Image (cartoon, rainbow, N blue to C red; front, side, top):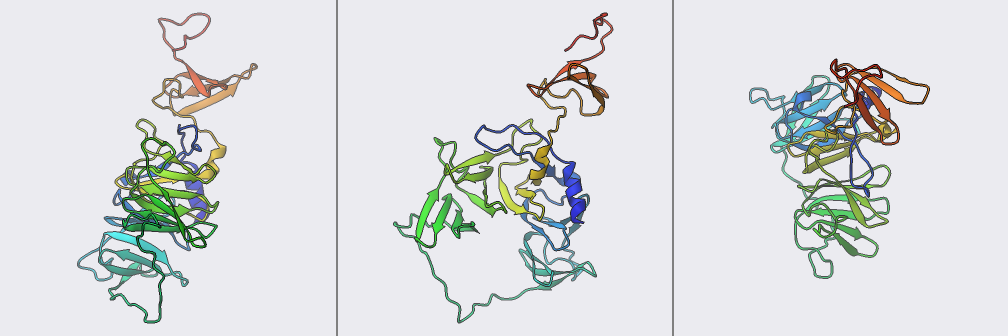
Length: 337
């Protein structure tokens, strides 16, 4: 199952142009066209069997690398989900999959492919104690709600807020370092409304914001690289609002969006460059490639099914196009366009 998922993702990678200071990332997409039940993603999870699960506002989706199966609430079936608005997904040590909705908790019964519903009141342990960090001028917190918490490799806590950006909390020094958006600073946080955080296996911090795209923290420069939707670039993010982040067992980054479905960044695919037809006049003339060869001068010629003959320019990574035109063809060969 896991190997199948990797192979499927390997065929879904494109090219992207980003600001010079940002590492180049390419994204592939899953949308309603591929079977997503809803384009707004609340959570992403990979279970012990390798399936990827998407919590959406209209159903629970299970993805096996090629097909998406959707689970929804059925008012006539008490073994269906308690609600179709899914908020969170997790798995316990016994590999039971738990699904939280806006109307109760559900446990997947894998053998029967249905759910057991739980509606329990919250329980506060009498012996539990908490250390609270309240708003104060010294701490620098604005009193905004904390929407998400992440922990880095150094044991620091990253606190994402509803309207006040991101805070780095050092538990040893008891200090807060704020990170906020600034129109004058291109390396600042993309937006102060933080929805989701992820510290990946390499220790990198990713931050998803509302209308501020995906942000990658650069600790040496104390700045952020930004990734957003780029009109005309099919390999950019599908939306500016990032609502969920998850890293799977193979190191692929899954990015859920608000009304833009799923985006996938696969680091292992960076070993290959993909050339295809784009809006640029110097891209490959047509994506359906039938043949190619290298001549004695080291030039690579590409034959397409519908776009004519292309000459690859190695130094610029662009293509010069040739098409047959009876009115301009000469003994010296076709005229480039």
